[in-house]
Each structure stands twice: as structure tokens, then as C-alpha cells.
Length: 296
Image (cartoon, rainbow, N blue to C red; front, side, top):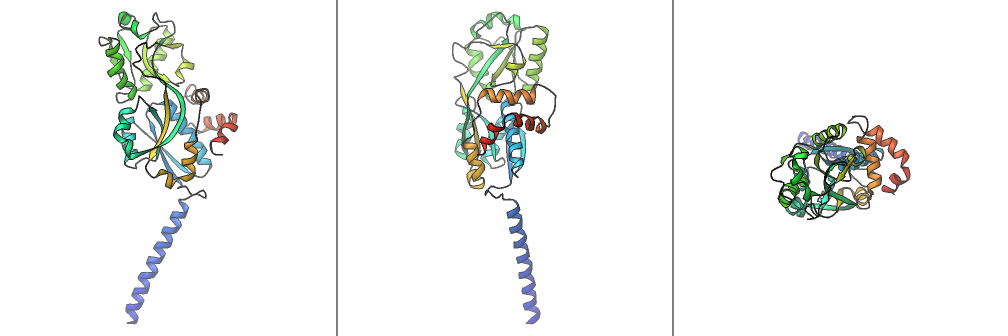
């Protein structure tokens, strides 16, 4: 009996130790404000406004004790990942046009955090001295642009709108629509504008390219690119329960285009680097009042 009791006691002690260890881990993984410590932010490949906002929040949250992981992915997999809980949040959802299809598919399985910018728009941009000013002039002058329209990622909402609305709407089907990546498009844009050549690209506002290159938007009299859109944050379901403080901050997050241009220019229109932390820390020091307000 004694040996049997001692065996049970040993098992109980082991279980208690295990439970204690789990409890300690749970405490370590939770901040004083009640939020979980680990948080993952999904970032669309090549979408600079989302990269900028995500990197800014990473620096802010790291300083508050969070362990933030930025995970880059194409647009559709991000929405899928949010719906399955593989990501905690993303900050670059464009509505009501660009990501409408994805929201129709995944909207019931994710949560809206709120709109943080209301000045987003899809555009077709050309060099400022191009011989046309409107999309309804492009087909007749396609040869002046090498019969090419340079796009971004094949899976992007902008690519979908260009394919389904802009090209048929303005009879651009004889132009070669080249889709690859945003960096590739920007490289083409930089080369063409530096050589004084005509170029037509799919672009969007806000984007630092409008400060970096001498370009203009073509008018869209048929409205194929839609009206100005809002930039929204979205999270996985139950995010608010796991991150009550952060959820509140993101619900109140606002950034106007001038502030975003400033951040993007600091990050992307200079030294080629993937370590944005020093750049953002310097930018924060120059915009301290605004940054402090984000977590007030």
C-alpha cells in the first residue's frame, strides 16, 4: 500500500510541476495590459503602404514588450491565413473595390479593425511629359508606350481590376499587359523616367513613387478604377479577446496620406535595406507626438 501510495504521490507531484510550468509560461506570454506577447502581422508582398504601417507598428509594439513577427505573403494567402488563424492581423485591406472579392470569400471568418486612411486610389500612371492625359487616349497612342502596360503581382486586386475593367473599358486588349511584381514595375518606371521614355504602369495612391518620379495619373472618365478607397486593418476572429489593448489601438489608428508619404519616403526612397528599424526610430523621433497618440 505504501509503495502504491508513493507512486500516486510521485505522479501527482509530476503533474503539479507540469501545471506550474505551464502557468509560468502563460504568464510569460501575457503582458501587463492583458495582451498576449506574441503577435504576427501579415504583410502583402510589394505593397509599400502596408509594409510601412506594419514596420511602424512592429517598432512601437517591440518597445512595449510585444514579440512581433512580420510575415510576408501574397494577398490571397493572407486572407486565407487570417481566416484559419495562421496570422493575427493585416493592415493593408483596400475597400470597397480592390479586395471586394476576397472579403466576399473570407469576410465571415475575419474581423474588421477599422479604416486608418481614406485617401487610397488605384491609378494608371505615366511619365509627366507623356503625350496623353486620359485613359481614353491610350489605345490610340499605344505605340508611343511600346504597346506595353506594366503591372504588378498577378494575384493583386489592382491586376484584377485592370484586367476585368480598365483593359476592356478602354480597348487596350492589343497592348501587352505585363504582370510580375511591384519591385519589377518600379524598376521599369525608374529606368524609363530616368531615360526620358514614355511608360504606362498600374499604380496606386498613396505611394512614394509620386514623390520619387516625375509622373502623373491618367484620367479615368469611365470610372473603371473605382472611387477613392479606404485602407483597413483586419484580424483573425477572437483577436480582440487575445489582444484587448492592441485591438483598441488599431481600432483608433489613423494616418493621413502626407504622414504616410513621409514614412514611406524615409523607408524606401533611400538606402536599399530590409532592416527598417533604425530608419523608423529616426522617423519616430521626428514625429513623436503623432506616434505617442497611437497608443494613448
